[in-house]
Image (tube, rainbow, N blue to C red):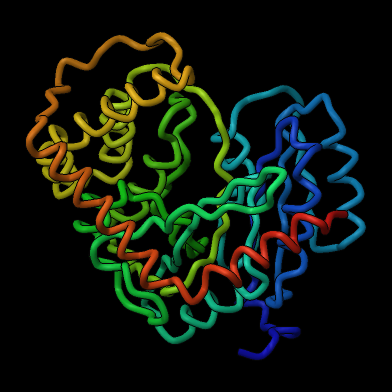
Length: 336
């Protein structure tokens, strides 16, 4: 694919990057975004009340006229920062990048090209892959596919029911800004766990249907960290979906959530136990949701099934993994 050095105004991608105490990694993330082959970008960097060198890094980046610094004082959380970015965005497309993640250099070129080929689509996504970095170098995890998105190399429609059941609706998409404004969907600021899940789910089940498509390539390098959280993943999952149902009014989503609650409740409790064993789980800070009723049989079946899906995805993308690892390694040495 040739470099998109010149693009029409309708192709502008507004990239929203919330940043809080991000001085260590933000420079590499901004370099990764600004070096995209698709040059028609508006990079909105929202300082969420940082007290470290984050504001100075943003100021250096703003030498590039495509960078739009946003600061409102105080720490109001990632959802507020992302919503502030949505309000400021002017591009044809809006997307979100965390301040410690990286992108392949042609990511937006691929996504915008797919959008041109499928003009009915309001959401265009691809695959994320997890990575960690230590003294030995970059280590790749698995992609995050559903059973219908194991394959790579093609563009196809997303079946949202399967996407919901398999991926919990996380996707790093470019979203049509007018569609986003028309539906009124925002990141829920009243929840601090699962806000990404709630937003992504609401986008996928909004009305009118967004006709989401997937580009079958790894397009988002997701940094895995040893963060901790409080117990209650099952309760947070239910609450996040509740908020998505409120935003969309989707009876389909409500029925799916009720159907899959026993499966995902078991899975969330299982992962809570693993975090606790690793010393990364805090005490519960929200009351238990009485609807949580985990089913061990269907829960274990789902965990084993998704493990198989992840393993198959590694086979499907095995020819790409060395290139991905090398790209990440190179990008880690580039900063502003």
